[in-house]
Amino acid sequence: MKAFSFLIAIALFFPAVVVVPDAARSAPKLKGCLDSTNLRQAMSGRGNYMLFDRNDRSANHDGPINIREKPSVRARVRYVAASRNPVDILKQVAGEDGYCWLNVRVVTGQSTTQAVITVTGWVRGDLITTASD
Picture 1 (cartoon, rainbow, N blue to C red):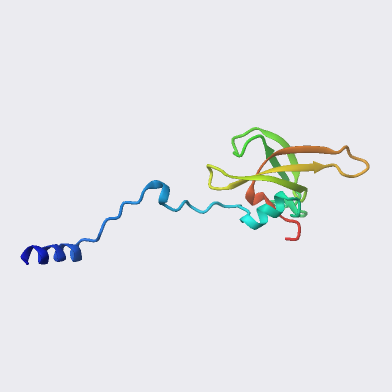
Picture 2 (picture 1 turned 120 degrees about the vertical axis):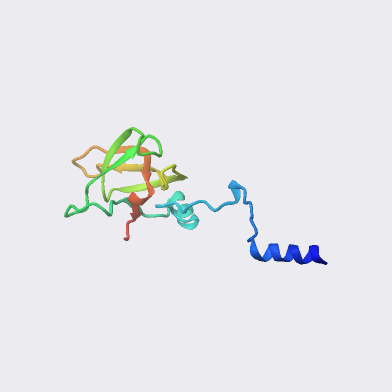
């Protein structure tokens, strides 16, 4: 009986230690991600998205946004597009920098005076918004 009481005393005074495998720990929330519903709509062509830098302080919010070869700020810039340029979303991946990255197709120069350029590349998720925002 004394051994049982001793075990109860130890259990009360020392909190239980739980070992959780790395895979079971919740990952930190990534920034700039589309939820599964919006991503599915965007990838099926039903979404209406555009490039947009919320931190751009210019009058028209039409500053440059880099379209990159890979989902990283260290990747080579493939093209520089203007903010508010429409995009088609092709894919979303988790970046090592804490952001979601979106693989996009950008079509620029859609007026009669400019050549049409189509570029596919990666943009950090926080630089894309719905056209209605």
